[in-house]
Structures are given as C-alpha cells and as structure tokens.
Length: 306
Image 1: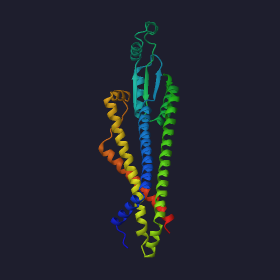
Image 2 (image 1 turned 45 degrees about the vertical axis):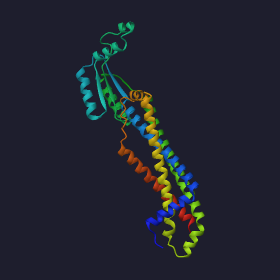
Image 3 (image 1 turned 180 degrees about the horizontal axis):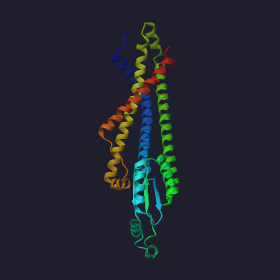
Image 4 (image 1 turned 90 degrees about the vertical axis):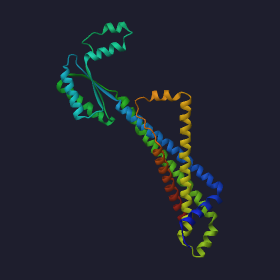
C-alpha cells in the first residue's frame, strides 16, 4: 500500500467529514483561541507603540541660574547631543520663558504683574529615546551641576517614568502568558479530537496492519487531519478579525467618530496596515496553526496507534 499526498489528503478529509460535529466543535475552539491570541497580540503591539511614544515624551528639564550665559548653555546642549544622543534637546532662553509664561497667563493680570524680567530661568528640555537612557542623562547633568554650578535644578517625573516601565513590562508578560495558554489549549483540543478519531477507526487500523500496511500509510492521514484543523481555525480567526475591523472602521467613518480618534492619536506613529501585511499575517497564522495541529496529531498518533 503506497502513501501518496492525494490519498493522505482524501483520507484526512474523510476523517473530518465523518466526525462532522466533532470537527466543527474543534475548529470553533481553535478559531476562538487564535482569535483571542491575535487580538491580544495586536493589543500588545499597539501598547508598545504607545509606550515607545510616551518614552520619548519623558522630558528632563535642567533649569539654569538666572543670568547664566547663553553660550555656556548652548555648549552644554551640544555636548548632550554629541555624547548622549537623545531624541531631542530644546533650549528655552529667559526671554522665551517669560514670553511663554505671559501667553499662558494672559488672562490673569495679578499673576502677570507679579512676574518681571530676569525672574524666569533659561532651561534645556531633554527627551530621551528610551527610558533606559534617562539615568545616564540625569547622571551627566548632576556631574555638570556639581562642576560648573550653573544648573539650579534638574526636574523629571520619576514616578511617571516608573509607571510607564512597569506597565510596559506587565503588558508584555501578560501577552506572552495568554498566547502561550491559548496555544496549549489548541494543542490539547486537537490532541483529543484526533485521539477520538483514531479510536473510532481502531478496527480499520487493525485490519490495515494485518494486511501489511506501513506505519506511514496509517498515520499520515491523521497527522494531516490535525494540520487541517489548525489551518482552518487560524484562517477563520483572521477572516473574523478582518471583517470586524472593516465593520469598526465603517462605523467610525459613518458616525463621524473617525476624526475624533485621529485627533486623539495625533503625533503617535500609528502604522498603516497594508494588504500585503494582512496576507503575511494570514500566512503566519495559518502556518502556526498547521504546526500546532500537526504536532498535536503526531503526539496523538504515537499514543493511540500501536
């Protein structure tokens, strides 16, 4: 008895159709697992984009003593850009600081009258590329403060920085844990389903063994059956996500919610998902489904086919 791809696939489809309701239930559970995994993976990806954006917004401000020479501040600015390579360094002169203050409190004459020239200090606003770069920048500024004594105060929100870092770590751990858990669930579902299928074919398997059928002739259709379960589950999950995404975008566009969302996320580099990227995601998910399904079936075959 020869093992051919055509015969393997045909026999695998017979296994699926003969146990129709079991197959539908298994594919549905696998689809749900892939659906939730993909949604949460997307959530983690989106969270990382937001966190990376907020990382660059974690600003360190060095306030200088009133009357500090502008050339000295600009020289320090150049050194920071050269040696620490931050995302951005902004110099605010004493005149610019006063102008910004007057603009912010232009409707409050009492406060405006209390502030005159030569009161507000010049400053350097530094945005780090990564949260991990902030301690190095703070250390550099502290050394400068001790040596030159021109820096009056170094200000940054350490609690905000720590909250961002902790949230980023928790999101990644939760994402990996959930995806791993759902992958295990998919593995067990396919393992049980293929095991039940093998049990229902036990008499036929014994007959094939008696007439001299090879191990591959018996086992490969069951392995392909599991791979089909995984592939169909992943495929249906991606199709469902694509339909829900399109429906959500259509609703946002027709209900005038889209401009509000766009203004809310202004400045955040949200990537545009192309058709090619969707196809790549589809291929990756189906590939993972095939791998999980085939591996589960191999375990089931080794356990139930003697």
